[in-house]
Image (cartoon, rainbow, N blue to C red; front, side, top):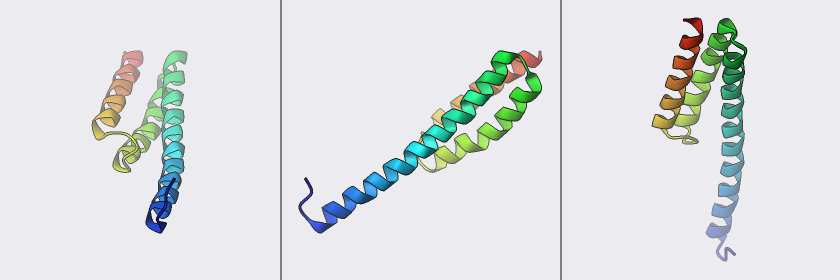
Length: 88
C-alpha cells in the first residue's frame, strides 16, 4: 500500500490512465471487429468503409501509447490486404 502522498497520487493517476486505456483498446477492438464482420459477409463496400473508419482509430491508439506503432501498422496492413482480396 502506498504510504506517501506522492505515491497515493501516482496510484490514482495510474488507475485513471488504465481506465482510459481500457476504453481506447475496447474501441479499437470494436472497429476491427466491424471490418472483420464485413469481410466475412463478403461485402466489399462495407469492408472498405469499415477499414477507412478503423485505420485512424488504430493510429490514434498507437500515438496515445495504447498499442505499439508497429502493431497498429501491422493490423491496418493485414486488414487492408484482406479487404483488397475480397474485391478481387
